[in-house]
Length: 209
Image 1 (cartoon, one colour):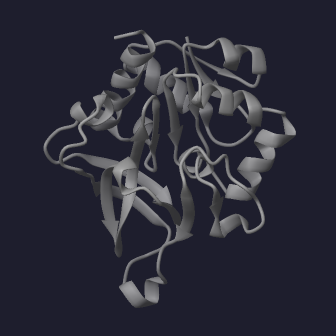
Image 2: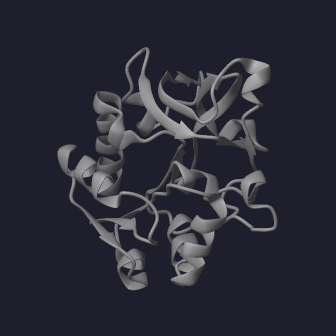
């Protein structure tokens, strides 16, 4: 079973329905035991970095989430869930992140300088990094378009963890991964064919495939 961590942030039912449409069962839960026993864990997130981290901490889910990420089981962060996997964010100064990836989350440049709106909202293309094909990138088409809604993006210290990028005034890490851990800045559950392919691939990892 895939556990989608419920800490009061985001439309978790849409992520659950996305997995179901991709052929994999998932449950929404805030139960630490269920998270520890799940075959795979998904950390979603919508809203502000500080609010999301404090939501996790308030439900005493920080340790279960970190244990899941370091357990070798498939782990996926989505949107602000991805951002929480880094050490800190400009959006929540003074609030630590989970530190699963080294680096910080930063804000897009002022739209008055780039001519682009912030937040970055809507469809955009992914560019997979050559030589870093992993199960969640190998399933993508040659020119994948996915759906974003965000004003901040992660800046990893280690460029080798970047699996795919996108561009919105600057080129940014849209997809990261290392070992059993993956993270996407976009919403796969809203990204139609490409997003369902990613959820399907993650579900197959959870199933041992």
